[in-house]
Amino acid sequence: MTRIGLISDTHGYLDESVFEHFKNCDEVWHIGDFGNIHLVHELLNGLKNNAASTGRQVALKGVYGNIDGQDIRKVFGEQMVFMCEGVKVMMRHIGGYPPKYNPSTKKELDIHKPQLFISGHSHILKIMYDDKINCLHINPGAAGKHGWQKVRTIVRFVIDGSNIKDAEVIELGPR
Image (cartoon, rainbow, N blue to C red; front, side, top):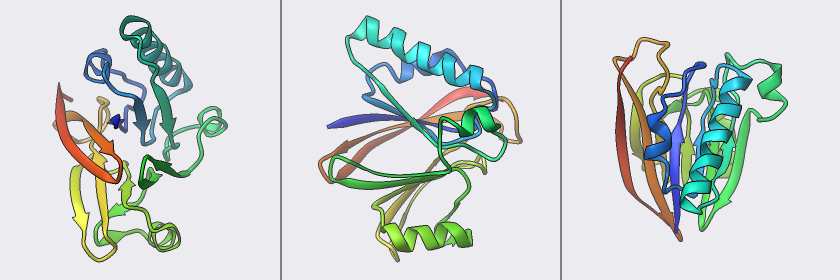
């Protein structure tokens, strides 16, 4: 069983409460628009401090977003496709949502055929299943203070074998 914390669109702002919400997670996935490399270091340091207090090592995975500079793009790619337990995962910052994927994302979904597709960018929280391609889509909304969203959100969920379950939407407060 893998517990995952999902965050996106921080735009240079990291709410300290994120670490409490992610303290029992095995992995944290950031879906782009970190905002700056300092936020990446702040996130890594916070996860490291959580590990010291809980004894749980937490892996950070991520993709860059459209506002992220070369310093972040040297660390994170545009897209990740990987296995988490028995689930094939595809992550891209800009992707759209079922059935309105952008053309490059639709092509990648057709190639990789993931069971879980995660995107950010829109600042719109969505958890929805695409029956046409048998894939769950999650967009955790935006955790930062930049954008038009009214409430900052993150998501926690579990992958247990080939099951994706126990999704929780966490509100961090007003933008």
